[in-house]
Figure: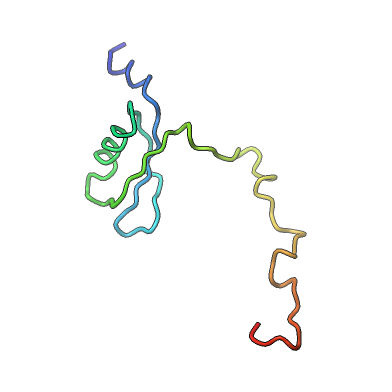
Length: 100
């Protein structure tokens, strides 16, 4: 195994988010390995914004991201069925109240 391959395996994984010049939010662009945040940011710029399409880049350590479990989406993303109180249609308009 080469030294480069060995170092890459020891470097943490970073998630890269790029905000395009036409966008209002950052979008996940990919992942990369880097030894620290500064190098991750530089590598992300070089790798994911080569055509000057980005205005901002975020790098986040992958192990700092918490996500929901796709296998348990039923309970986590439970629909509002049977919870009509969450919708404005549940409430009735009072006769004496204007501008509602």
